[in-house]
Structures are given as structure tokens and as C-alpha cells.
Image (cartoon, rainbow, N blue to C red; front, side):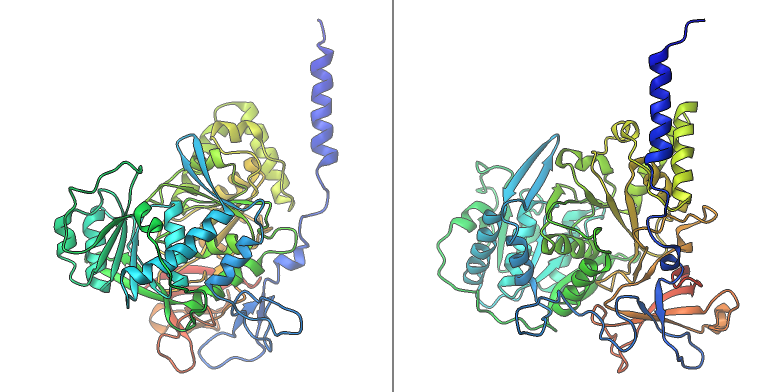
Amino acid sequence: MDVDWITVALLVVIVWIIVFLQPKEPDVHPLILHSQSVISRIRYPDESATYRSNQTPHGQPLLSGLSISRAYEQPKDGDMRDILKLFAQNEKKATIGCVRGNDVEYYGNARFIAEVNKFASTIVELVPGASKIAIALPNNYENLVASFGSAVAGLTVVLPPANTSDYTETVAQTVKQTSADILITSAGVIPSSALEACASMKAVIVVEATHDVSFTSMTSTRPIKSWSDFLSAPSSTDVSASQFNAKSPAMICLSPQPSGELLETEISHSELIAAVGAQMAILPRGKKISPEDRTGILLPLSNAYARVMTYAAMASGSSIILTTSTTSEVPLGALSPGKPTIIVASSTSVQSMADDLRYLTGKTARNSIQFRGALNILRKGRMPFANEFFMHKVKVSEGLRLVYCPFAPGSNTLLAADLSAIRGMFGCSVIVALTLPRIATPITQTHIQDYRDDDGGALETAAGAPLPCLECKVVDVGEHGLTSEDAKGPSGELYVRGPGVQSGGKEDGWCRTGVMARWNTDGTLRVLHVV
């Protein structure tokens, strides 16, 4: 029998690479994963001790902002203008890219800053005295310009929910309910009849698909301007010295309820900046978002978590990659033309990707062996190399190193095995964040180097540790049989407080979440159910 020595040599080289080039030690010391929170030494009756991030132990102040340091000055929290300044510092690399099919349209850093300032000065002249501006746009460049421009001008941004069956009615209902003064929307989204029913609205800005679109068919008693005409209009108002009230609302997020109503959540400037600062600080050195990254946003920008992650990436100097999407059910491969290194995606998108990987690994024995080998490396605490074959099959670009996935109690439940499949085949970390609609910041999130899947159970087994901008505790709930004396770990209703959280009107600052949870022995939170 002839022996193909070339094939044999290649197999030997592959085995050598797998065995000898993979690092032997875990990526992070096991003791770090077994002590992910700082627990207070005292507690009150009928509740657990207070849990904090390891970065802000008890006795130190919670993180309240960007911690911008200057020589001989105390670090300050900053505001939206400081995020712009930090983004502008990476002038050579930082861009905003919009994926349209297989093409990406890039907008330079300098152009973005200039158009934000132009927007801010023009908007205050268009409607003097305006306080609220509704932004009903997909994830695009104009959305970010309008968002930062409105913040610089001192306007509160109103964000209609994206995932609704009748978006036109939702936008109209949003404007009426919040009494927004200005509406920015895409061409063809809102008919003239719907505009007339919004009594508070004083002006409309329409983002046209091309500069040749005519708006003669849109008639209204209120001014209607195209985006290009609005930005080219002369303006002389200087808004650079405008004062920020940290307690005033930065944005109002609306979420649909089963009854058909829209639930309003006001997020102040201080809460937003604390949430952004926490995301910039939480990752360990060498893993932080950097100017070398390209952060892709798959979640709609009407989502508070998507906003926080976008602003955190920009403040870190990262480029931003967007898709013109108004839904959270977008595959990770939709951003591939922009070659993102970081992706912020919904649990639905992550679940879909995991299903595709599971299908591929079961097609052939070779795929199955590769998959099991990667999982074995993960269980030893090491991240395997990315599998280019699988990444090509599911249309995910090479270089992906991190996926953020928000998890809301009661929504789609990911399995730990799903996250292991993505880590193993893509060679990238997955961070899952526990989020609630009425709180700007995630409450907890998993450690970037925590690859444990335990028994492959539901994601609630590892919701992560608190962020540095808040502290958490659980309070006994007798009717649910949950007590802080539980042998499995302190259990009860989750309460949170800190700079990134609304106080809910309570003097002590604690905010009820309605989430029933249990603290694990490693300082991470386990979500049980929601009431």
C-alpha cells in the first residue's frame, strides 16, 4: 500500500500545533473566577449582605462616570461631550461604518464631529425652546449624529421601540405620549395624516434615502425639512458652552407592553455616563475595547443597552459598524463586510448562530471531532484558536474576539452549551449581561474569561457579578419560599442601587427589580424567575 507521506506529515504538524502551541495554563487564575464579588461583612435581618464588583470594594465610592483625569485635578465623571472628545482623539482610525448589503460606507471621524456640532447649533434655531426630540431611525450614521447633536444642544432624546408590528403607529403614539417637540424619521415612515395628530410636534426632519428624493407630497402645518437641507442651513448659535444638568433626562426609552401601552423609562445623564464608564472599566487590561477594535452593533439603537455599549466603544476610540436594521433578530454575519472584532447582539441572534454551529458539527465525523476538541480545551480554562472553516460557513468575519449579549429575565433563554459552541468554534469570548428595561446599566455580567458551562444548563446559572457602578442584595420573599438563610445561597428579590440606577423614590436609594435571584458561592448571580 502506498503511503502519502505529505498527508502524514501534515497530520503530524496539525497534532503538534494542537498539543504544543496551545497554552497549558488557564487564561485566568481559578481563584479569580471563584471570588467574583466583594461581600460586605455585615447585613440586615431578612436580607443578604451587599455584593459589589471587585473593582469597587466596600469603603470605596462606586464608579460614577468616565473618570477623566487631568494633571493636578480630581477625576471627573464627564458627559456626552467628553465621549465625543475621546472619540475624536483617535482621528486616524476611528470611523463610523454603515453596512449596506456587501458594501460598507465609512464616515470619517472629523466629519462626524463637525456634523454633530452643526446639528446642535441648527436644531436650537429650528425650534427655539424645544426640550424633547424623537429619533425614529434605523441603526445608521444619521441616528448617531442626531443623538450626539441633541445631547450637545441640551435636548432629551426620545427613542420609540423598534420591534413592533405597526411601527408607524408606534412612532405617532410615542410623540403624543412624550410630547416630543421634534421628530426625526426616515422618508416614508410617517404619513402626513399621522403628523397632524401630534399636537406637541413643532417640526419634522426627514432622512432621505438619496439626495434626489422630493418631499412635495408631504404637506403639514409644521416645518418639514430634509436631512441634507437641515445640515446645510446657516446657523450662528454657539452651543459649546451649554451647561449640563446631570440629573436631567438624557433619553427616554419606550418599551411595548402586552396591554398595547408604551412604558416610559427616563435615563438621566448621570446614570448614562455611569453605565458607560462601568463598561469601559470592567474588562481586564489587555481585553478592554481599544482604538484597534471595530465594534458592530446589531441591537437597535432604541435599546438602552445598545446605546451604552455604542457610547462605551466610541469613548474607547473604537470604530463603529452599523446595519440599517430596526429589529434585534439580525444574524451575526450581517456585519461581516465591516470585519468587526466586537459584536453587540441580541440573545436571539446568538441562539441562531449556536443552532447553525450545532447543525454543522453534526454533519460529518471530522466536524464533530474538531468541535469536541475545542470544547475540551475550553473546559481546561483556555480559549481555542478560531476555526476558519466554521467561521466561513456561518459567514462570520475573522478577527472576532468578543460578543456582548444582553439577557432580560423572562426572554429567550440561552444554554451554557450554546455559549461554549460559539467560544469553541470562533475563538472569541462571550459576555452575557443581565439587563432590565428601566435601568440604564446592566446589573451583572459574566467574566470575559469565564468559560465554565457546568452541566450545560440554562444561562440563569451564571448571570455574572455586579458592575462597578452599583451594588446589589436580595431581600427575603416569604410567599416564594426565598430566604437569605437558604443553604444553596442567599435568595430573594434583587435590589440594586448606585450611580447607574434610579432610586425609585426611596430615601436609601435601593431600587426593586422584581427579579427573584440567588447568590452563588463564587459571587455570581443566578436568576430564578420574575414576578
